[in-house]
Length: 429
Ligand code: 5AD
Ligand code: SF4
Image (cartoon, rainbow, N blue to C red; front, side, top):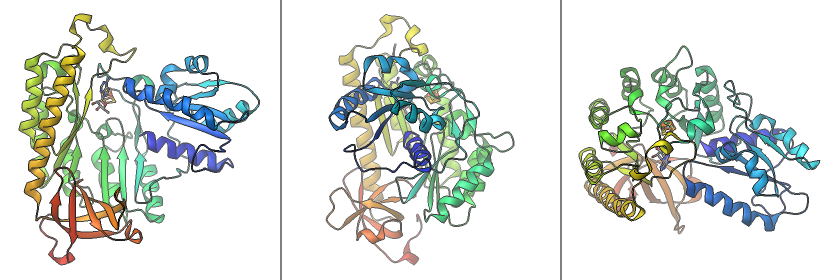
């Protein structure tokens, strides 16, 4: 979502006569787009603001945008004298005027919420030449007790389906074939007429689109309509990132996730029954206040029961102003316990992923070539429909094209692939 917001801001500034430069050296304006979801994300921003000072001349404008800007507002102006702009997620429209004002020596905070704001007239300037992030919903109406997002991004609102389809058509015209629909609880999308199932069908039918993904759904918003669309629309990929957060119903209750362990597992079953070959990844928080050894064991057993393909794992970070702050202090899980649980969870998740991936060797996949592999060396990084990273041989001219490969090796998390003839690329292509 932040990358997508950066693309919108860059588009707006480009339309106002600015040009992007490759790095901070010599820039007239430096905007740091920020996340507030965990304390370490914010600490990194503070470090970055410090580093940027050495690139700044006397007239360089430094601004902080995004969720940390929204959360801290004028405090950021007080704590860092070089910052002259603090702009929250609903206020990017004003950026050109705010920058003009900053050039005249003024300092601003723009953090009002605007429930109508979708930046519909902005022409996103995309960083990625292969897949396009398309925001379809902003804000969040859930109130998970650990989460700062409802307070930094405001209430949930959906774009009009026709606008999303128009943007999809534009990205196809620019030569992109994959879109990722974005929303905080993206499958609760509803523009007043159409639900997320209808949106998947409409976007998935845009001529030239070959892959549709979305992130992140909430388990409670998987209606039959959404699951049917996912199963029936050939361009919608066989992968879902389904945040679980915890495998313990008691922890989930304190988190106010609004589902139990059993509900989550039932959601996984419904998805798997409808979509053959579906891969599932998740988010898990370790050390939420009050998490007992038993509750943590329930998370481990849920991880085993689902058999996730991968997981993002986070140590709980208390955020100012979230409902979790009202939980009794004695529920705090000691750091040493959190660290130990985190390592155990990581080992389990990695082990399960490795076992699953080993069993996939010899299978075939259609992959989309995304970029040069980190190793370089005539290697490219590609992605299968089921969200596996596959390293394939080839040259940079192949970026953005599709290839059929056999999975020949795995590190446990990523694969190597050897090209095969297309007609043989069954049954999982
Ligand atoms: N502490 C730790 N992890 C968090 N997440 C959200 N808020 C917190 C927090 N306060 C995680 C959740 C979410 C992901 C984007 O970040 O797992 O799904
Ligand atoms: Fe945060 Fe919960 Fe909303 Fe996700 S659904 S953004 S975790 S409040």
